[in-house]
Length: 211
Image (tube, rainbow, N blue to C red; front, side, top):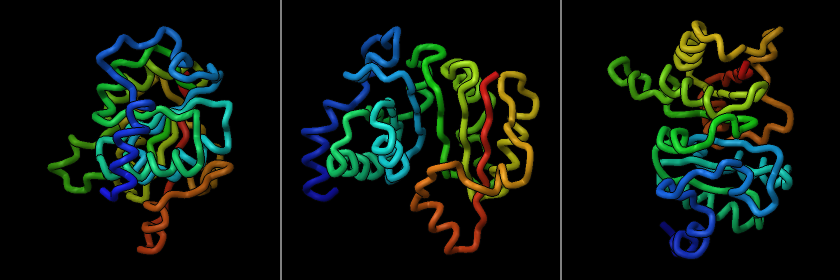
């Protein structure tokens, strides 16, 4: 890590980090000083540009970012510091552990954007989207909340739709092809999306509603 990133790990991250050793708050909004009415979780935020853009555009909301890799966390800390964001909390580790810790029906949206597709068949069991993770997401999402998924790997898109197909606690919000071809309103893009487009891969955007 660069010197500034290392300094932010020491000075900024302790103020923003979620400690799973402590009991989860009954009201998730209590993690934030402004008690936001809308709460969003992004799992695997990578460089953090999407999470930071959302937090800046919606200062009254509360955003939680989960990332397992230190480089991604370091980039996110710089984004938070540069933009002077006060509505972000961070978890560095396995998102499954965070989901188990979060209170039930506390989230208004979860974003899964350009997660590792684990393209080799023998690695499919490592994909984040699974029946186990969908059970956990269903528990923490409010009725009517959205689960958003984006990927440039068509196999992972198909995988996700097949995982969703038997479920009765999520509904795919789709009417026309543009509903999965076009990104969401206010979409800032991500570095992974830009790389996919440069390499000729077409992103897909899926939105599911918690029933």
